[in-house]
Image (tube, rainbow, N blue to C red):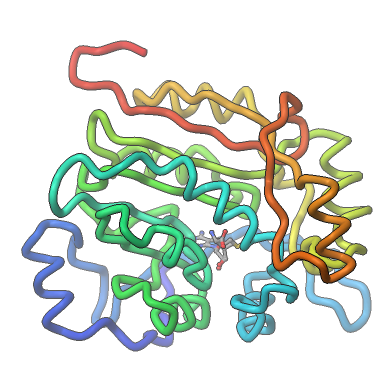
Length: 286
Ligand SMILES: C[S@@+](CC[C@H](N)C(=O)[O-])C[C@H]1O[C@@H](n2cnc3c(N)ncnc32)[C@H](O)[C@@H]1O
């Protein structure tokens, strides 16, 4: 369904024009950028709570994006782990597309990497916060239908989004479509396993630093085999590795002796995991 979004304030016209000329933007549908509405709301409401995966939660929590001990604390730690996978830019004007950029947590972590950081998100409040925190090219759009031409991005980062969408093949297809051959796809998300349901829902939603109550719908957790197959179908061989909070860091964070928690690699991909892949060059098979 096409919705007519309450338009978020657009980036300054001159910047948009420059970005359009450079081929980053494809003209959007409608006068203020029509987007398709995510259809991932599965009502399971307890009284006073929003349904699981309700996009309105991001508006309720808009003031929390940049609170290091707030509802999105763990997203800060994950953004650091994601940024560590971003390769150095190989050409002037290289573009990193941040799919579902949220409040723009990746922005300061990309300083000095040489990328033009472009973010899209469904949530108008998140886009506003992202712009306020230095993500100049932030736009309200749907990951199911990215408003960009083919092969425009050197890096596509899709962090903590795939577990929120109902059409995984569509979003993965879009991420791969906009990626240049030789470009890097970086994903982090939650696996569709019983262990993830226990840890990410039953445990983490009750712990400080864990996801806010009802943010996730376990029905949308990601089948790793299907994800790898979908990326391969679009010419991106994806390697997976698990990710977990460093336990001593987490204890020190809880005791307020540390400002953040390092996310460390793990062989277990059954809960949180990262995926990285390089898009095949023409004629190449990965
Ligand atoms: C858990 S947050 C992750 C934000 C950011 N990637 C980060 O790690 O800090 C999920 C984000 O996905 C956005 N989102 C959900 N469905 C979307 C869709 N179909 N298209 C674009 N953004 C979407 C939400 O608005 C929210 O900002």
